[in-house]
Image (tube, rainbow, N blue to C red):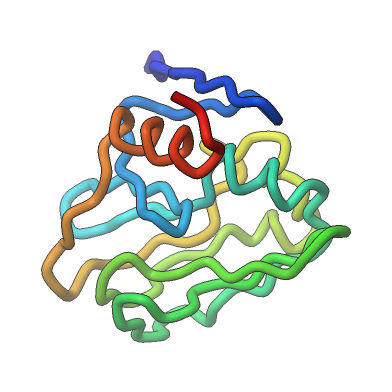
Amino acid sequence: MVKCLKTVKTKIGEYLVREDLSYTDTDEWIQVTGDVAVIGITDYAQKKLRHIVNVELPELGRELRKGEVVATLESVKAIADVYSPFDGVVVEVNEELKSYPDAINRDPYGRGWIVKLRITGALPKLMNSEEYLEYIKKREGVG
């Protein structure tokens, strides 16, 4: 499957955005298939964090409400939370991140996925790739 990528260049960096995903204003990407969503952080977010050295993952079966912390990322620069974009139940976590947390840096839209949630609530309005690109530009003072 070909993944279409768009690039946004700012004064301080270049960020990739996949066209086939949805995005939140807290820099999570979401890919929904049926009633299960894969969630990770965007290229923009991982570049802001820099080198990720630890990931705290949720327990399987954990019920989450929209806006709750689903995972915590520790980098050499900062600690950041990953938020649930909707109500859901954790059905799978990316176990590889326990040994290789930098997979998020190397491949944020692929091997760096964080969690899979079974959606139990309504899906909120999420940004598409064009809206997310504009959101990054606005935050970075471009355009």
